[in-house]
Length: 133
Image (cartoon, rainbow, N blue to C red):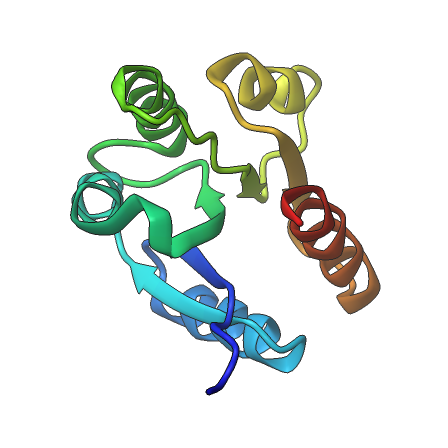
């Protein structure tokens, strides 16, 4: 019987970024489910929240942005029994003063600014995956 792989939910509206994140996740031995907006992320979590070990959340998406989506995820987690908090990493090109704090205030656990190096990406994924173990 094979061991179940950890699945990362990628919430990103730009197709090139979606593919890049998916490749990077698979390169470090994880699986990725990709959705292109916040509402689709909420739907994926409603369908099977226990499937996901980690969420990579684009901050600046059309419609429901990453901050709004994260707040909604945290509210839903609080209401669910048993309670399970999924780590959310904000991924954004916004690097102005206060952007990282806005992500944390919304309920994200960490922040990765684009462009990033492979070592940065791997380190942050490993940090949060180990925290789940």
